[in-house]
Image: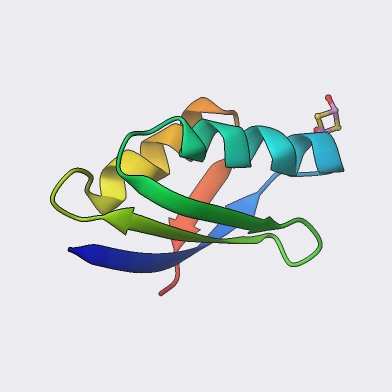
Length: 72
Ligand code: 9UX
């Protein structure tokens, strides 16, 4: 089923950073949408919880080079 999480991302300094986070998330099968708000250091991710767990979302963001914490 569909789950939505909000994460705080540390280390994004330009719009290319937020674009690479969005691309990294959209590359995961099971992610339905990824909206990164650069100025707020936040992202909202909607995904299929039967295909992905919250940790997979975190790992993808970390692998893209940023620190992340789940806030909601
Ligand atoms: Mo450019 Mo944003 O290296 O970190 S992608 S500043």
